[in-house]
Length: 398
Ligand code: GN1
Ligand code: MG
Image (cartoon, rainbow, N blue to C red; front, side, top):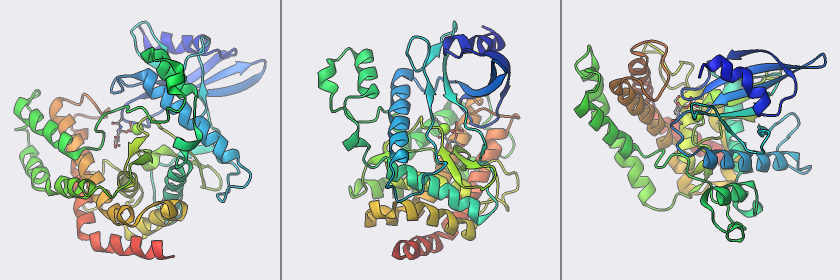
């Protein structure tokens, strides 16, 4: 069905009474399609975010039960009067239900759509140029981890349990203490899995791209760096890293910052929040907020770690959550930075070889460009690994 016709009908499915005045697509996010729609209600205008959910999420009911559970938990926590974190102006995402009380709606082509309240006066922090911006990104995600720390102890029989019950048909009483987050994408940060996928893609070479210009050199470099996967596996197999609710996609663009003060307002894109390791969250913060280069920078000289930005981002993160992290977790954070830049490189190269079926691209070799930028960043982080460790050690001592 034509996308515009679907967009025009969304207001009626999501119980938005006003008249649609217009919509625009945003360019944030590599997997979902996101639109900001304006509705008119007797002379007033109100905006909503409509999102078409990517098919990479196989179970939308499970996904949305997580999103609703997390956002209502965050809303409650941010409203607590005695929070040590100033929560004025801080917000949680609000999901708009369909007219039938569900959290998503399927269009005639079985594509799932959801709707959020629009958060005015804030922007997504795609570009990070200053230490104060880097600090806010770190602080937003550090607070996210801290706010979710008691998710397991405060949520009991709730929407999540009810949704899962509806889906699985399980007796609802059995879910009274269900708190585990639904696993929206299994083995999401398993580098070995991503490397195995890459090897399959090389063997299949579905789009005859393996022999295209320069690909062999990039592929060799990626494979030479697979020791990073071994290091992460080793660290995790020691068994002393806590598995806790983490965001799992802590890129700077997933933080909304106030248009005037620049302070973080809201963490968005909760879709991959699952039990996992702090090193992956911290790693993505460093990958996106500790370099002024964009994820798809063409000049490898520019895709490098900036230690001033790193220090600021790490400070923001650790001020908010270091008290919850164990010594081994804190020690693992710099490896997380290297691992996440490398993981992104592996995934972008795989998708390039597969013909760009997972990440949206703006031009034909976009995923290859992204891969090379992330490789350059990973290499720069490897060179500065000791400095990153010293910064983390120094900040945790504060
Ligand atoms: C994807 O969709 P977006 O842009 O929030 C991806 C992340 C990657 C990121 C790279 C579900 O996130 O894992 O790190 O691109 N999300 C999924 O920018 O695969
Ligand atoms: Mg995401």
